[in-house]
Length: 521
Image (cartoon, rainbow, N blue to C red; front, side, top):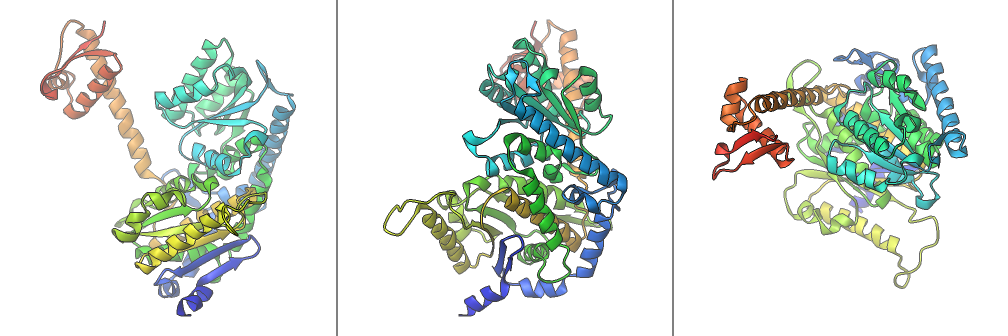
């Protein structure tokens, strides 16, 4: 009975959005909640929504909340701009579906989305969670990396179909290397098929960006705006996420409605604020220092990309070396997961019996399917087994001192996916406030991009040296000395990659440091 009472006291149901949150298995929830500075959290959130500068590195506002409710945008111009884009999006999707806008081989039947990070994860999640297979108006494909194998795989699926494939290129600047490379490869594929890429292309980008100028110069079908105050990890509520949804025939307006309704609930300055409950549970489970990982276990195949989506949303937002007072804090929450009950046969063994360095979020979906389920055995359906695995795993973990949160949804549909994502977006903001980090910049990501560019410049120097000495062979150390670099290890790795792709010759030695490399004439 003690556990039943705790469950009753720590389980919350939000009838307006049909969502339940159970934090009864987070032991110190009450103690932590009593200490939460709610006044600070809501003051900072109000400033964010009113248009204060939140991304100080880039001097930008953060306004993804305005996308589902233009009425709260801080200026009339923004309200009008957002509403106009939604109207344009609807008209464009209708023109594609009706055949008013066609490809060179006729009516568009496929969509190829080229983007990376949030520009791909959001549409991928929505596609997996909300698509209806053959009943979709259009089939979706993705290029979300600069891996040639992945590019070949996507293009192989579209072989012979490029003339009826709409290509959406998403990049704020147009200079994102992975997206730029994917676009170039797809352009080559259209040329090989004797088709004109621009007659099948749509850009989602910032006004007057490199991509925007290219699209307008080449006469692409459409350019949609990507505002600089929308981060990639929160862009699913922008054209980035909504255009692919609309093209598939997914009700994107209901999706926005779910986000808008959850936003309203998470502005409540009470204990019954769902995002405050969730963020407090995270803090209690990790001691506010990220001491335990967050394992996301949705017991629904449609949501098997949700943990990947949350990895970016949470880890990019909260993984910070410095707090807002420039103190060294090394904050963050590690996120991983897959789906139940697949994980019954994978890492749940370690979760129960191994290191207690995690907490679990179970996502329960009450509706098994749209139709009636057959009985697998007397009185038991396949969905009953799924529910049994969820409850059994949760109980087994609790009995062994493992903490968990349970979120309960009635169904996975556009409205409730919007509810779920908006809940996590707000919880991330609240948790960032609790631990005093800026959730809206990502200096580590930019550092990685700069380092990659430096390495590519080093590769150009290597190739130039080999090209200038075509009859000579060089070791990595020879080349490093010749081009004035101390990065011998990086030079060796670049040489190996070039040789592996038959762009230079390699004479192997018994020890790799003595390998000799030569320009391939």
